Image (cartoon, rainbow over the protein chains, first blue to last red):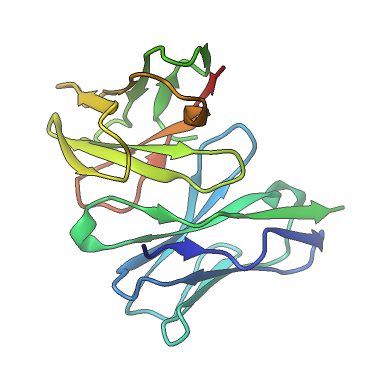
Length: 113
Length: 113
């Protein structure tokens, strides 16, 4: 079946650097894409989302880019901080499936001081 | 932190037993979804409850069942536990059955021995 997946399982960056986490998806019918952050022992935390008719969306220190041509999603974190260390998941949603989210496998981001 | 709470935090069961997990949704939210997250993987959608009825189901067998109560809290029941059921079970609430923005609880860690 169609699924959302990630290119890299781990990413290590220096504090203050910018981080880029990538995601490939295969369901061209997805309407929304969402990035979640999951810290150890906690549930996923909503970071930012983007609708399928958009290419870019910015939040506080985060930017999500969507390239529908190659079915690629990325999360950029500016000035990465130790508190950003976590597993990051991309997820997709189709309006016809209600609230159902399909998650990828996640990328472990480690920020070195 | 979201307003979604789950109990218990941890649980150890024996293969063949039955288990009930509980979730209280965030105030104002009427839809609850359950996800299973195996170690090192992204959450997998089990099912969603809206207005006390199952409203969408993932690829899980019938021994996974649920309930939603008038106050929108929910239970996940798993019968005839198998070793592969060992996982983190996440509850997520949203303000409607079509809302993709979901708020996750901290999860219940189930270990089946």
